Image 1 (cartoon, rainbow, N blue to C red):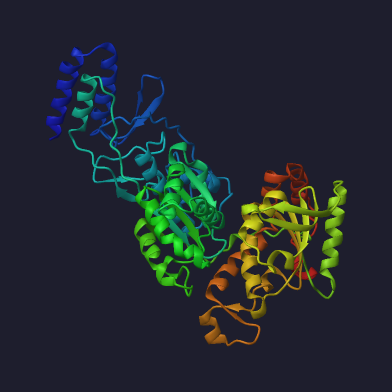
Image 2 (cartoon, rainbow, N blue to C red; image 1 turned 135 degrees about the horizontal axis):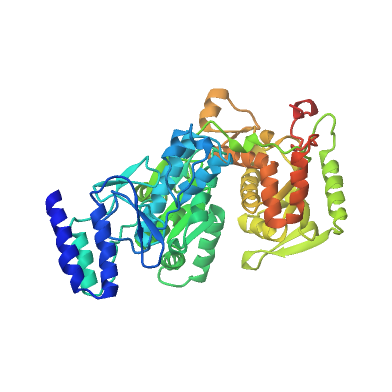
Length: 549
């Protein structure tokens, strides 16, 4: 077979080329050069294309030249990767894996087997999308065999079949004056990542978001924002024969890839529409990427009319690869920023709210802002009253935020008007304040998603807030009292809330807040971090003697 192939190459080189115009000859040379490389040694060869750019052609290169020239720059491997087998094997030049490798080499990310497995899944998804949607520079050179190496080179997966006659098809196209047409791959399955709080799900998904080319038509949303859009569209299409189909079609006209952060279903209205909505969007070719604290089979567990939701779970498991990211490491708890952002009641602080008010008023007065009542607009013509607001700063009691019939739309409007919010008297939740606890979960999700700087006063630390909330399994093993809230959904969600409240006090989070909302604060944050005598910067959630540890 190999000698036959060589003979065909010689025939092509001697006979066919002479009958072509100069421009076609160049196109033929490109085609035949790639073919000639298929059975060559594994060392790469440089081949110049008509535009002068350089492609690296390996022995595994496919017979057809890619529609877009692959311009691969050699990347010098940092010394820090020499002892790291995973980084040595990570050869992707594009996609989330390339960003992740750069982060690891710069010490931005720590070595974590769960994150490594996840980035492999995301890279495979990225390359599958690039192949299906024709994104330039997105797909690594691939093998013509039954399997190919992904950019990670650690995972084998199926590739689009390439016939040994493809190079003849390429010659035929040149003879007929037609451009080479790469085979269109099928859209890949989506990815559903679940695991505990702070393990890096959102961070890794955002690497995919960051590197996605325009052909992906990717949209990244928090689940709360997504469901608000869904219900808003349903009102717009009210009166049409099937509003849900109209909503799904409207969404898939705007996006091909939907990245949903914190997939978390508690509302019966959301549960009722998700199955048919996603069924239609998947039929329209949508690829879903999602993060969640819960495995799909546990979504909306114990919810009203859950039978209506079960078809969605079955579809989700069919349309997405389900990836377990459980890890014992909560990275949010690694960086504590010692400053008075959270004022907890202690023996040395009998009135934390008074301290919060004094600190907040001093801060806003330093920038020349005067606090006064303000009313902000919310979706659907509603409004929300803020008792004390000035410029981008707002202060209000917890009860006005979570003790009233408010929802995610109110919190989103608040986050769009203010970048710094102080909340007075956050309670420790009990059976009597279960609704407030659920609203607190939603509030923190929204503030975190919008990178809002949060000040708060409370009777306890963030770790104390949900101490009475337990799962049914814990209730059976440990017992309950009048204060206990037995609620699996709230118990899982509260872990995320506590983790986020802790992260919102970290130097990294406050830097991100400053970059997005108040760049003038960056220098002060960097100086405080670099100072030898660092001020007590973790929101005083610990006793003074523990804060110095």
